[in-house]
Image (cartoon, one colour):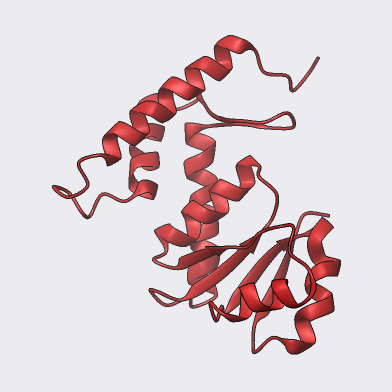
Length: 161
């Protein structure tokens, strides 16, 4: 069936991620080598090899680096300053990591919001980190809309349809 991943693809991806983590282990020696940089290096080395696998989508290292670059460009277009917070509220999927990497690459800080939160708990989780932007998957927009009037000045971006 189209879109399915084989056991060998999952094993290859797991081995690639193990190598990526090993590259980040000596971070004290090279503090300028961030995870987005590691992904870019892996993209140069492994290109079209699968990096992220899900039931709906597979991203190669090259595609992941490209998407992360697109999200970094988005962050720059929003004039996101280094250290500014963007909340990310979406289910686990390849796009989730691409967004996270892209914002981090642009020197923003990503606050990961639990997708099970609603009401006051959701408002508190968002409010406490003081984000300038909130990226929320389309299926979670209703939960965010319910608390939006109680949030400060935050720009909400819906992801997906």
